[in-house]
Image (cartoon, rainbow, N blue to C red):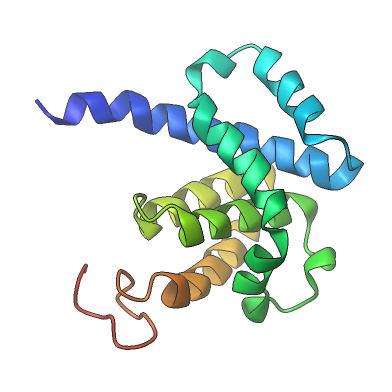
Length: 158
């Protein structure tokens, strides 16, 4: 069966996203050095079950491209980025990075993972806000893939 090998990778990516979101939250709140934060997370129990390369990419590329990433979702916010709850801010940044740079991952997977992280770590009902912001961002960032994409990218995936 071809479905079996994808399962472990999917679970490893999910764990990598969760850890990366937590690490990005820590970076945002403390301003600590990314390498120090990464070292802390790599030593944590259960890190061996995460996609380490994906974790590293998210942790380092989100801060490196922060301005462009925030520009991608800021038009869909109802308040300034700094006023967004820090957990939601970390999720929005990470998912927007993925929408922009990880075209190998379907936009629906990225949004679903972001919503699940927000349900687990964010404020009550925050997942609805995150879902709405990311769905609007995906319409522009993944116009060809999104059924309501800007520029008439409509009919590819349903």
